[in-house]
Image (cartoon, rainbow, N blue to C red; front, side, top):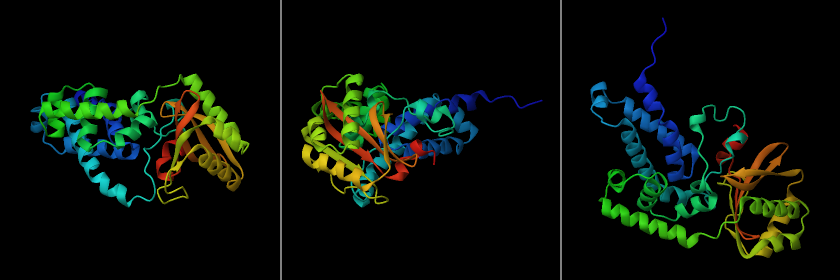
Length: 300
């Protein structure tokens, strides 16, 4: 006879997708999110059966522990970011249907895509204090009451309410009116054609005059160490890059739930580009070239 499934194990493991989704939004890194979830489960199974049975809600316990681990990581991230070579951009994610075969193998490892996952949103989260980010994500995105948020952040519910309010203000101040997805796709397609044609005037026409382009190579591949600002400098930068990389192929893909581009050499993804679009102009371009952040795109 086969062993009977453990209903408690099924219950505990069913929280995996929720924890991955939470940790990715808190950290902006799928790799770090996976590590957090692994550590959370390790702490659960390090307890005795008696200790586990004394916990009223295992799901709430798992969320609380994962949130605290993320908070600790965010607090130490500032020092790590100071050592990071160049600009740090959150790890881009493909549409769920576009994951390479077997990467990741378990659907529970995939992040649910919604507005709280687009690159512009994640970049604003990076400007928040760790406590603001955790309070905001737990309350505004995952709808946890402030009493539960307080248990993670280690502050009073009233203080957590203030943190979330401050975070909400940052989001509101940075937000540009969102263009419909079809309109965004048209702008990205026009950028792709102009870039492929090295048409500087066409690139300038589709870029906001105050546009910013940021690259993230992590010191592992060549990327601009500082953001490029202004429509003409960005247009010339991208045209020069197309000159420098013969055989570069641009493919339209969904990046963090929005229209984006993937640059490939010999069929291998070498860069993923996300865009922030207002009306018919591009305001921000984020290009991730760091191969460690491209695992979901390469299957490596």
